[in-house]
Image 1 (cartoon, rainbow, N blue to C red):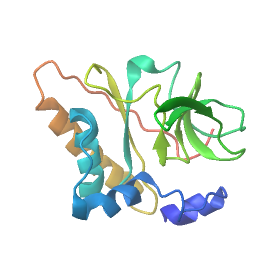
Image 2: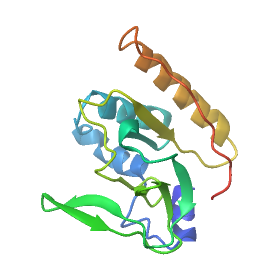
Image 3: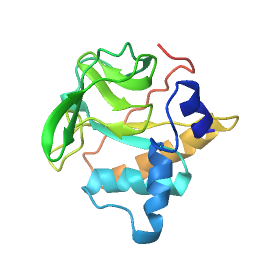
Amino acid sequence: MWRDAYRAFCAKPQRTRNSLEALLRRVPAGLPRINLLTDLYNALSVLHEVPVGGEDLDCYVGPARLVRAAGSEPFNTTADGEPLVEHPEPGEVAWADDAGVTCRRWNWRQCTRTQLTPATTRALFIVDALGPDAVATATAAADDLERRLRRLGPLVATARRTFPDRLA
């Protein structure tokens, strides 16, 4: 389903795999270790077979929204260890806030501006799902994520928002 969705906005799914597919290819060698929150959502992504992303909410400017990019929005990334600003393709499905794209090609690659770090104290997790069981699948993954986050300590608080089923 994700490959068909990527083709619908002219992305090449063989070159730009969705985050779940990229993680599943790494499972035999072991998932990458990045930091506690990122490792947790990557593991749950594989366990529940849905793309899951995590963002530092304090680095957001305005609300998260799923959009079709105009192509001029900035996307902060790195190349060869150096900061770089790219732009999505016009019509590309992307997560964005008021400052630019936070995740390109729906759930392919997250920006550096909002990435989770060990200093993150407020996180936004995005669980993407497609198909007839999308709501049930995303809900099960989000429930599991919430349970595991609460185990991190008594000060962990969670809230949930469901996005509409259409693009902005």
